[in-house]
Length: 398
Image (cartoon, rainbow, N blue to C red; front, side, top):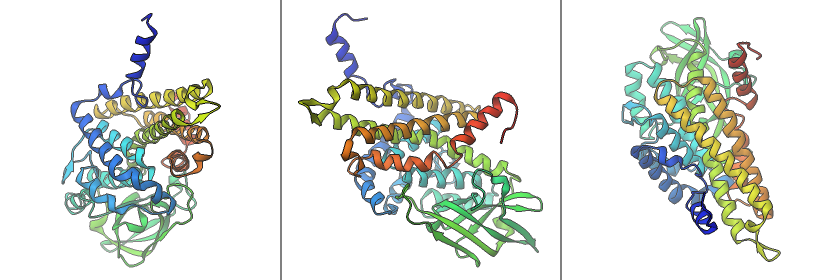
């Protein structure tokens, strides 16, 4: 240990406030290049407009082309015009995008993990060739229809059903809280059949298929959310995903999406910490900067501790994923911890900002409100706690 306080201060100054454990040094060169390219895009094109998009409840569709050109849609898929990146790179993509806004990360997550993934994993070769290249380019937008108005955390209580009619299927039911629904060209819809739960590719324009936008949200305002309605919708046999039957189909998609969320929420927390560090260094009260007070430094340190723990959880989860060893329970631990940590960071950052904290001029109030959704969707905190409890005891308490 150095006895020279100036040397200690110098070493501390070299640390990245939003990466205290230098997680970046643990990344490969390719992973760092991915992070840098997305970070540049977020800094230059996302952050400058996102406060306005949030305030006016507008999805920034003009960003989709840039997202696609960077290879961020279906980034983990090999072939079909996709980037074929590893799991850690996908996580870093989510982290940087959510540093901009949860709504943009949600768009990419739904397109990639919830829609392109099931087509790639369970679709026919014809379905892959038809949909994946245009989805990777952002020319075709998709949504994922699992959650129902009465269902919530109990997807097995599904009411939407499909019946055979000759070589086709007839679909009836409704889905709710569906990201991208109002602009989707195709919906990956999960429905009960006599053979079990199956996935269907329901195209915009199919007779009897309608959507409605959910308005007046106080969270994810820069994301489009809607409902899907199916009234005797005839779906060709060629639009049924042949490779999976049962809940393991949609649940495997959710595992992929939850993995991205584990990384994404940490990006939101990093944005909040950066904002509040900058603010407290320049805000003068009682003759000195806020950052010079013990109370503020302790709170900033708490934020950094939570972010650091989340970063390390995500990185190890990503390494397990890339080795083919990742288990859903491990994803539940990270989603539960990281989403809780992020929302606590965002709320405290908002409080430290005082009156300024309620303005979209600063990011914490926007991130805090967005994270109210993120901590709930893709499995509530309680669901993930019970998932871990089941793994520990072998007893299902749902």
